[in-house]
Length: 351
Image (cartoon, rainbow, N blue to C red; front, side, top):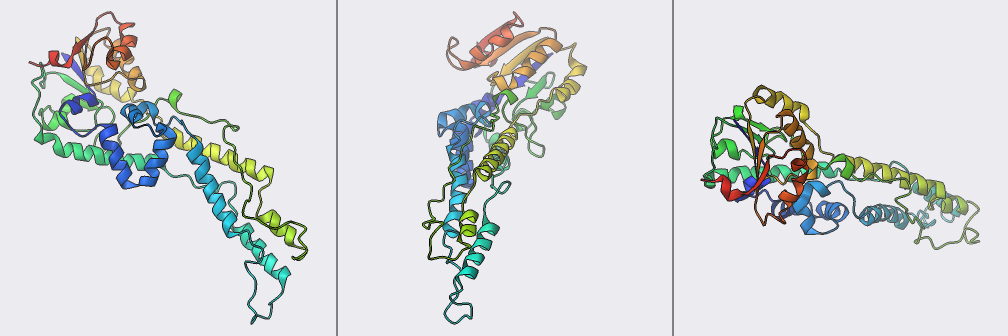
């Protein structure tokens, strides 16, 4: 029996729109341009090419400036709207007209109520945003499957097993492989779709990694200004940030960035894979990998399969020059574990 392992390159060989750079980027940008720009800057450093290696980059912080800028803008809004102690002055018709002490007291109360404080910095749920884009990309690809032609692949039939890392139903719809012979290890439409980065690639910030300048550049009065009543100092303190307040906000921001980045940690589903493949372990003699890059994020699956299948023959497809193809370079870890590993052009797997 042959175990086929199917990666995204398989769908792309059928010209399905599952390319992260070409297909996911425009979907995310159309959904919410601001959120896309934010993700593109912090995780991909505004480099479109890095999206081609989506999973090895998502959750890996490369640029914290947009995070600091977004936080500073929120605080600047507070400064801009709460920097005038006479903002709540009474009209000439009011009986309190000219009561500067009460005016400043009102401005101080509003500033204290509106002050952006520890725990109040808003941080978007980036994972949900990317989830939506991923689902839309897969739906669009699934709708295109039956418009594609089958490849004439050797031994591609229901007698063999199919471990697919894809979310699409290309195997079921185009090749009519029974679902009982297929395991979608990362889910499919109607199920949770698993994607993300290895924990070792996820950025976890230390408390000193983010530093905020929280000077109030909008405030134009001095604390000893004699044009205001004695409670002016209360207002000034309400619209400025002490070192302790600034540090609390920085720590809160570090915590939220780490929490957000960690949502992109990829779940390893070895137990589910074990349950599926165990009944066939003794029958599997060969593993054929079609369209999978053997990237770091999924490496543990391949090492585990090599062990559980007792060093089977591996035949792995590549597309470019063998000496420089990333698949061949990535696959060296497998070759170090098993001498029966072979890299072949994708065309060699076709009739």
